[in-house]
Image (tube, rainbow, N blue to C red; front, side, top):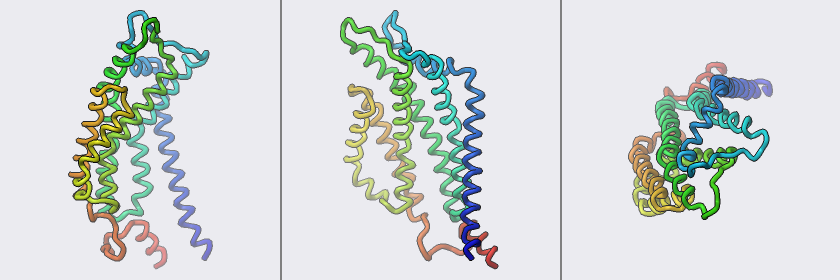
Length: 263
């Protein structure tokens, strides 16, 4: 009996290892395809700052090995970002057998939209926020101070902003999941709109340089995404599993397989 109980756990661990290996392979394949262009990729990422730097100023490398390792590090980040759809699919493939049929139909759009929103957030940061932020920061340097940013420090800064904006643009998905799990409802969120608007500006103040324009550029999209999440969350309310109310024909595949083994 104990051996039979451990078999499902072992099969889940084997499946988990398979999904992890697939994700790692996807990242590795993309990395090998991009590593030759590592310096070009860094040049693209650094261009918003380089365009705003004073004439004669350049980026610098204060560490001996940073000219080599910093572009490689950036390429690893880019590989992970580009392989995000594959990683999300592997997560989906691992949890799908434990979901009801109606849940599987609802999760797939969430996975697709979360990937797209993350990329949109990164693109928004690169094309809109970076030029404004770096233009502001480079022009506020005291007289006699030459703006020469270290390439490693710059990478850490922009990756923090990329992650911040990518995660911030996941607001609709987060709202849908909260409503789906029954933590809140669209009606309750609608009543909290004034607080959400203030919170969006607070987040914008924390993630952007201290100027009203760039703060507004993050706060307004975040609030609009909140409204999008509230709108679509109504299609997910009441769709989560409720104990004792599920149709037997809508049972998870994992449960079906288990029942077949027992019979």
